[in-house]
Image (tube, rainbow, N blue to C red; front, top):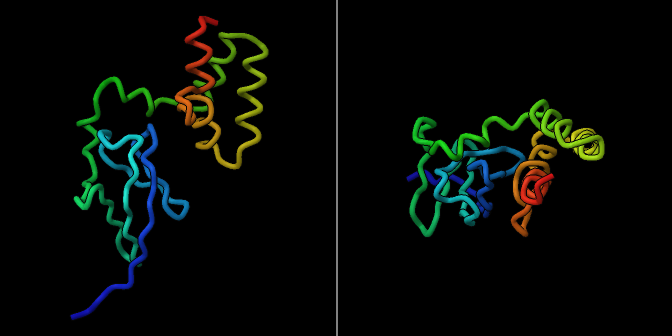
Length: 129
């Protein structure tokens, strides 16, 4: 019997249904958002587990309508939203877009919740500005 050398990691599922493992992103079903997953890596395989059960990749058509908003978050949307608020918000958004190494990280900080459940976008909309 041939055995594969594997490595185990853990990863938290982000609001966009992805986990990050070794600088790569893998999608999982939306039911696992904010949950800690076990990830088994080998040269030719990535397996994701939750409570010892294998988690399968979701079919995009099964994404709930209220979650599709996460697919539409682009730098253009962020700048347009910031412009509609005012020059100070635009400066903050532009700073975030320019200062992060990756566009995805910048958008994460603008649109997706931090550990305390807030994001720049959510905070601004919640207080009615």
